[in-house]
Length: 394
Image 1 (tube, rainbow, N blue to C red):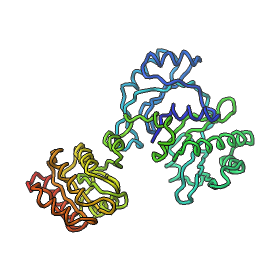
Image 2 (cartoon, rainbow, N blue to C red):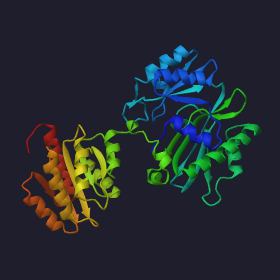
Image 3 (cartoon, rainbow, N blue to C red):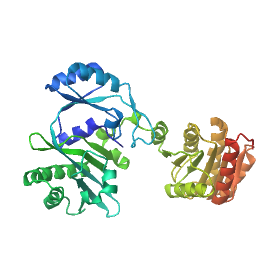
Image 4 (tube, rainbow, N blue to C red):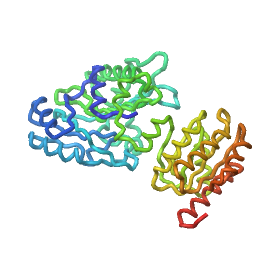
């Protein structure tokens, strides 16, 4: 789960991490009231979307009058923003953050993430802040300082000194960084986060460190422990099909191809997509219906698949370990009948009561193409998709 910048800064503030004062607004009038409440002579209007790179897309503006606050808020609240981080989606701007303008002496980068190689939380920092850190990592990797936090000992002050001096900070700023990193680590662990990014972390005009921007990702599997954070979810910022899938307990990721895949188990789903590509096809999605799927979930999965605009064929690949193949076949038949599937469907079943499952499909009278194994299924679905794409009847 992703958070808006204003939500992340609220969490930062709760943990004593210094951030600029700001107010969220959902109308131009609210934006003007926010500027009045903040006071001062200069403000920053920031579009709230789940993506970085907003400034390059016109989503961050420095303004000097309340009339400009109103005008920029009005423009942004009618925008859709697409950046290199939106995965091809254009995200609607439903709110803007009005923040006090801050003098910037220097921009730094700081983040914490789950390091799956070292199996720990890792801090990354760089003196090259305010830019795409991926570009820094690719062209100037020596500018990135990495600190691994021991899972038993937790974050230690010496690690902040290692980070701070590695970024060329003064002793004063290293002391401030120590407090910030300790607070970020507590936030990371308390809220079951998967990524926390401050870009930029700045030295301001008063010579203090401050988090000018904030990005947080949370582990979806921990949402049941944090109902307050789950309530912050903004489905308007997500792929509509992926959001609908999560409501039904399905794991769905939209891809660029034309062959929809419905599989039970994430590993089997990855293998299925690989075999489809090896046979010349392109998957339209990753869809894991889970090891304990049932007929109702299969029907919902078909609805999700058919919501895609570019689906020319569907491959169902089910291994019946926990779930019985005959029950899956009943779900497939019900889904094809009730949902009105009008693209070729290739089904490969294996496992518990597989013979009964195949017999049900064969006797259904529906135009379902059965396959003996995964390679056979991939060949058949790629051929069916090519025929459908070219307008040839099966």
